[in-house]
Image (tube, rainbow, N blue to C red; front, top):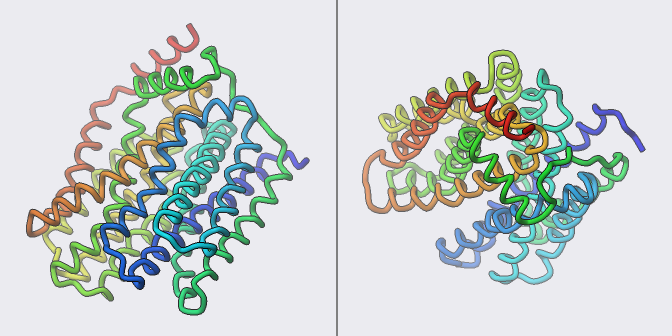
Length: 395
């Protein structure tokens, strides 16, 4: 077995990149296939929620297996689930069959992300935690950004994108066998369903503010990808312009993901989060004023991506700062839960706003959400909370 920390880190990052690639491929690909088949947009959207539903279903069940069998087996089970499920899509094209498969993808992906996040946060030094988690986020983002490039293959053969992504997933999955298994630090609580919920309570009590950035990122990402195109088309912005505006956010986030992680290691996670969320708030407020200008929106989306495109990874790092290592598994699960809730609630509220309110209300919804997170971060007293949690856990 190969034991070096650096080797293990890059294998885990590679696994996350292919996970991002498969998610980035599935969202537009299935939407395009269903649209070509004449399916209603509401049903198309409902099918897309299956992945996040899978994450929510799996979340409370993840910690006990991790503590019993370790990181490596959980990653292997999750990776195999994703790879096999991707291979099953071409077998039968049915709304509910594909809904079930996307549910399985959500469960498998959550196993991967939960185990890799916890392994990285548990084995990274405090001085490199922000850098390592930002690299994790960067490679997921790169995979997610390149995933949609396979959508064009649907014109050649509808099954081809699924088969290619499944094969790539299998190749990365095999590399996990070269790693030595490891386990999270033991906790005084029982390794059970009830014990998991007790740890959830501790995480929420002492690190609730660190869970808000992952929620905000899920809300933001799903709203921009799922609801903004509808808002744009209803306000006279054409499809070609939308295809330039939306990726601007992703490109901005890729550029600054690693630098922001390093900055947070040096100047503190809380200070970095407060700054970038304030910038994000200002960008989306400004987008409301230039909502008819394609160039203006591209600039706003790009700068916003540079700022708040790293909120998920910085939220995980901040959570790791606030909690002892025994609570890292539960903390990572809750980051995933809040991200999924944000991903489901964002398009829901955005849809209501677009349907019933005119003007730039869509952007003000996002800026209001960011303002709430900004105020919460500013009001959170770090030292007092840290002292309480460490004395509580150790006592």
